[in-house]
Length: 144
Picture 1: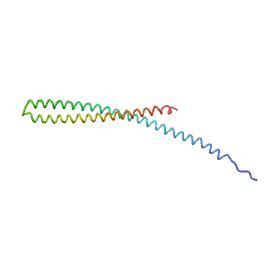
Picture 2: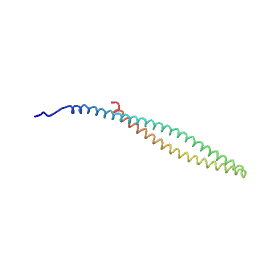
Picture 3: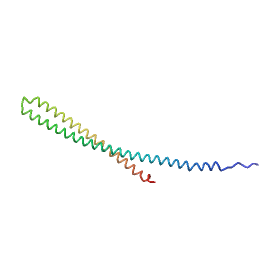
Picture 4: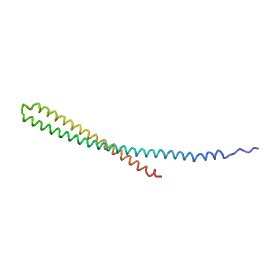
């Protein structure tokens, strides 16, 4: 009767590989986590840049609104002067009316831009908040 050939070597080598496989999987998961955290932080910085750009655009629209108002006032003054000149001021009155119309168009366009900039600012703020909230949630885990 022959003895069965029993060896623990295959079991032992499998047991030796298992911790290495788990350690590799854990290391890969940590890398994915850290990459995600870095992505959140980068996204928050991009949202900061977008918010800054929207604030600058908002300031520019204030300037445009001021120019539209001044142009409208100039057109009104020109119309008054044209009326004083009577028949001789008709051409000037027509030019003043066109300037007034252009000022109105500029004011309406500025209002549209202001509304769009407001939407951009709100979206940038939401993106900032989301990124910061995600980074705060992940920060305790990244300290380990």
